Image 1 (tube, rainbow, N blue to C red):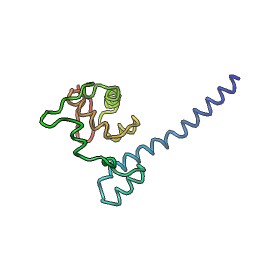
Image 2 (cartoon, helix red, strand yellow; image 1 turned 60 degrees about the vertical axis):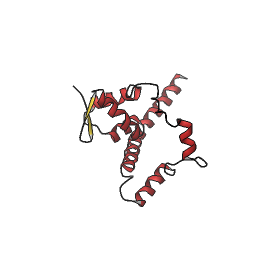
Image 3 (cartoon, rainbow, N blue to C red; image 1 turned 120 degrees about the vertical axis):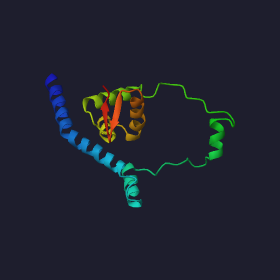
Image 4 (cartoon, one colour; image 1 turned 135 degrees about the vertical axis):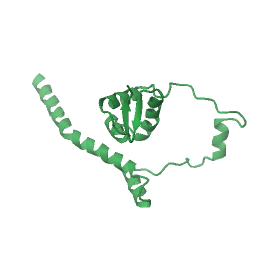
Amino acid sequence: MTDFLDEKRKEISDRLKELKPLVDEYNRLEAAVGALAGVGGAAASAATTAVRGKKGPGRPRGSTAKATATKTRKAGRPAKRRAGRRKGSGTRAAEALALVQGQPGITIPELAAKMGIKQNYLYRVLPGLEQEKKVNKQGRGWHPKG
């Protein structure tokens, strides 16, 4: 029984090693399509839509701007600040900081590919880390502070 399990573990491990470069290539290509989304007009956006498999952003059917505005806040009152964690204090921020420290000059698309998340999240997290003086941006790359 132990030999069988060891054999299966080895088969799975070998297959994972075999697939890893393909997954990395997929993530790089997906990041490239995202980066090129706004360049080149309708053909580029059609290609991006085909890769993502969905239409662009928009309001759900049947909703109206007026109805949404009255639900979120009453007229004449300033919007309240949302309670919760400080910006950049989550585990993703810590993971991004560790990757920046391990590879100074890393870009957001590279970070997103390594972390397996979408880039837009990092465009919110990294400026928060920059405000906390943990990282700084030089060109397109991010570097650890200190």
